[in-house]
Image 1 (cartoon, rainbow, N blue to C red):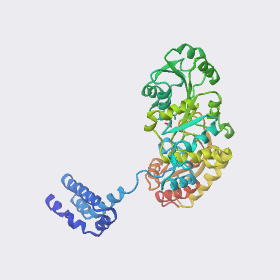
Image 2 (cartoon, rainbow, N blue to C red):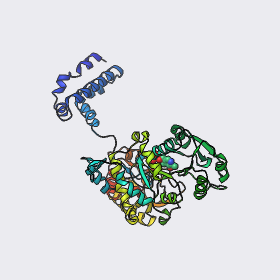
Image 3 (cartoon, rainbow, N blue to C red):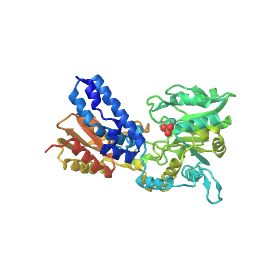
Image 4 (spheres, helix red, strand yellow):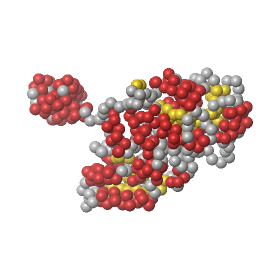
Length: 468
Ligand SMILES: *Cc1c(COP(=O)(O)O)cnc(C)c1O
């Protein structure tokens, strides 16, 4: 093979720059980036000539050089973060961005962040304001707390609470509550970071009042409760109720703090789920400082909400750490909107997507699954399409033992395996994330929006063309 002849076939840069396609790219995306892509593609061709022997293929590649440059350049301008359709049925899917925000809230957000806002400006007084002021009264109204503030996520909230209240001293936690949450959030490790020493009491399954009592020393700075949000210990178990811990804390003049994990503001038993301790219950039970996530069962943006006695919240607002983990205008804006929905619980259950999805039952989901199945079948896909009952999870480390009854569209492809179909759906221009089982792709409609049905049908039509 005459490699030198092939090397010579690669056009010179100035010749390429006169090519119509490349000229158009430079015009649209800028000269610099197009030059980068030209050099990158040329290097690739040289390497191809050096390392392969298929001269026909190499010649073809050389002829296609402008198209390859176009593809590489355009790819740079397609955002990597994309909308995906969550057909897994897992409502709080941490890998898929946890809680979805309603379109109305997203539109209000777009309006606020595309201009300036009163994020830290008091419009009444005409001077600097506090970024927590926008929702502090609202959170207090909804939870019964005296004061509130918000940081980037609940992991940061726990860190701030401990480093404000217990740094340099000890915090007592039950061994049954030494939680690890997904993404390597471990209570013992967070404690170390905060400068507080962890004192573990009791055993994995049982912790008694006396265990806490005997662990209290001069060094003790707080009693801490952690909600075991992502696991359940069943069988012979015992933990100390809040009221008892409150009594103990009072006797020793210690603050009682609680990491609630998921911040539930409504009583989930109304939706047929098992009881999950609500934020209001913790405050009513006398906890001094409670923290919880904004994007778990609350259904809002990623945030760590800290509420409780004003004297502690004030100290946290002044902690230097707060500046490093403070929330931005996106979070502040959406959080206020979502919290506002909770002023009317009935409205919240319709307008907060997470609550709406939790509330759906097999009865309401079955007709939706049938509609989606029909839309898919209308595309004459090469597959067997059926509707069936399915169980889904809340996810996000919330309500681990709860299975929600729902409905799914099951697609058994005829010309390929379910694994291949799953991959093609995931890699399509409109990525769809599904489960597979029994050589079928299963789409749980609980987490799919009605407005996404059309896209699903079209993507499947593309992948499974040719059925009849
Ligand atoms: C989820 C969770 C956290 C971490 O919250 P993020 O908002 O994900 O940072 C901390 N503690 C408990 C108990 C949790 O359930």
